[in-house]
Length: 116
Length: 115
Image 1: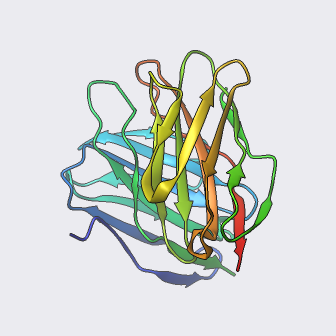
Image 2: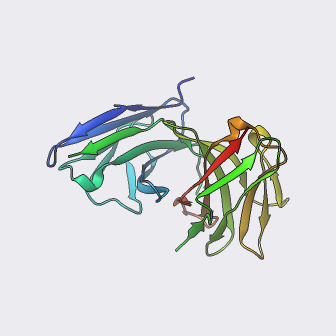
């Protein structure tokens, strides 16, 4: 049972380059999330998707775009990378519906991104 | 706005001793509260949650947490620490109101269990 799979595991970009972080889950979950983790700051929500075709901004959405391609996949795109986007990015999913949000999140193992 | 405070960046405890990792929260309305653990180079793993009902919640790996509404706290505890419990622990809160998908995490507490 793979759970939440993120690719790539590591990436180094130069300032101004673009890239897409991929995420897929095999648990048939409705909700998917993108977080970034920075030292001493915990995890901060970038974007959220309640279902295919719907997305909502989180706490730190600037500089990012997302696509919920289907129920399984939720990608995060950096159009023009900046050093401030150096971080560890986590995708997560949860089995939520009907407006109640008390299910735990299942996380992938992260993508470590460095922007020089 | 909702927030979580984990007042200790690091907690050191001897193996076999009880451990406590502290968490306080602020949220309008009733909270949903969660604890997650993160091992090096891995994603977060769910430990336990409080939704409603009994204030003492039991979770994975022998961990438990006590919800205290008057003190707005949700401290994580374990009666006897293991070296393998050494990891980074995160407390998180959600507003239980409809549509509140935002899950806010604390900054994390590094737990070191000394053999």
